[in-house]
Amino acid sequence: MRVAIAALVVIALGAHTGASSGKRVVLADADPELLRAVVAALAPWRLEIVVVADAPSSGAEARTRAEAQDARFVVWRAGRELIVFDRDRGAEERRGAPEGALDAVDAAAAALTVKTLMRLPPPEELAAPPPPPRAGGTEIRLQAAFATRIARGSDTNISARFVGGAAVRPSARLGLRIGAIADLGTASDVDRVGFSGAWTDWSLAGIASWTFAPNARWELEPYAGAGFARSSLAGTLMNTPYEQAATLALACGGMWVRRRFAMWTLGAGASLEGRPGTPTYTRSNGNNQTIFQVPSFGVEVGVLAAADFGR
Image (cartoon, rainbow, N blue to C red; front, side, top):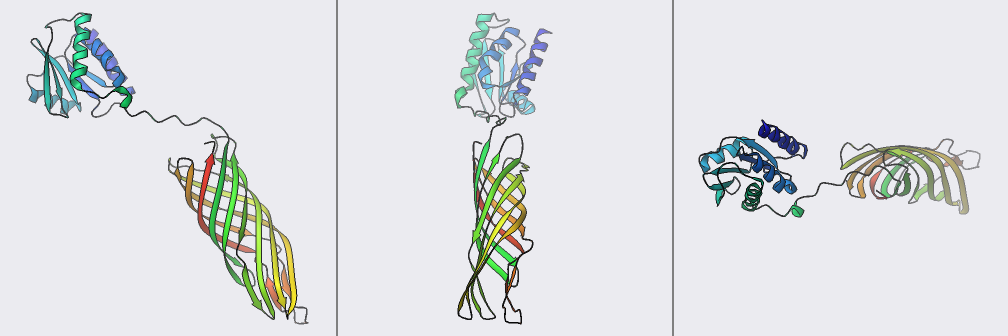
């Protein structure tokens, strides 16, 4: 009964440590002192020990038992010999050992022999478990993106954009981030009804985002924000210098998809932006011909990289 209880305890401890194939030992010996000594000797290796009462009669039978138990080692005594069968090497090794019931000293010596014959690596060479995730803490994200924007006003404007931003996540327990993004890009040529020049714009918006992480590698991060945009149209109208500028309200939203590499993330994103009440510039020649209408709507698609500090 005492052996059975001890065996159950050892098996339970092995299951708790997540033992798997190659980390199981079959001890085919009912001696309780030997069991206690083997458990103590092999504890640093976190091996699961399964105890059975009857010893195998040969190496072939030991292999069969190892395969049936999905174990690497089978340990038993035959006469005055202690035998260790290693399933991975397909070999058994023998050393002298006392017969019958063992006292604490003989059992400790036998357990030391078992450990030696197993040829286990030093415990410090075992793979360390991954560190637990941090429970909390502020995280700062710096991000840069390169994108293409298609904006629609009096013409369809396509421009290259650079989007830089920073955000703070107050707590690692939440996916919420609060920050700001700045968007600027190349000029769009405008040439119509006697005007020749270019339109440029830049914007600054405060944003809030929420990160969804389906696994440790991939993240989805929808966001929304509001701010302002600065629009400028400059050139010549009928050989006369002409310039118009406006500050506009801005609303934006989109989605970033990220692949994580430790503190770094790489990915792609898509966003929409709207600018209500955009101005239309016309010629004051009685015909009110449209020179340029500032785009009120745009779509951006691009790639991004970000670093998270304090992660």
